[in-house]
Image (cartoon, rainbow, N blue to C red; front, side, top):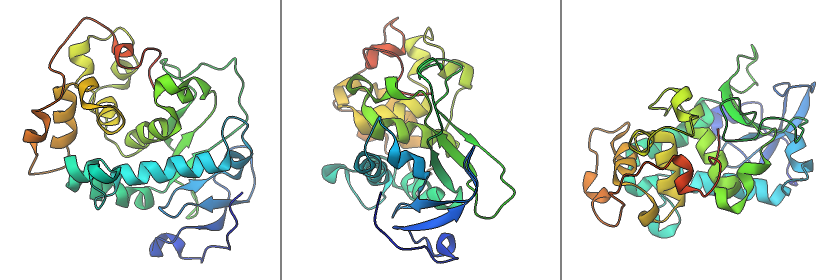
Length: 251
């Protein structure tokens, strides 16, 4: 587990991470000391004992997500939205704190529905806790192992994808988002998947429509010109799995 001291009582207001805070937000746990990552993610201490990834991999994945949405980190330095949509990047970076996003690692079973299906167990959803210290949105890692395989982009992309759900970035109904038989043309307009692919895949594997969905959201000055060179303009009858060579990366 990370070695750090206790957070101050007003750590949310100060946007201060890299410390431990007491919370009762997580399922099947009473009051626990949870780790607050430097960029604001509240992490269930059980995540640091999870056999599917190390504590370092969890923290590294959240650092990568923070880099992708950081309005000051351009594409050339491992960022993403700072280049494609800086207005949205600023809002997302603030929402980690304002929406009180947390990562939870409850007990799980391989018999649970794996990621990529409609009844997926690994998900982001709002929860009203009634307490000031609880998160508004939980990213729950239950039977998440299929999402973590290299063909499905791994833990950073999974957490990024679920965070976009928590941030309210959905552009299609979840029934369509989850449908493996949706047409490629319709799938290209799914903002959550499109933004994930834009930030984690090479241009040649991203449709220009997906790029446009990301650059136009939450901004009055979309940079459509950024989507004109190097992006795919092909549409096929293949399902969304075409991009990932397997079940959808998440949710």
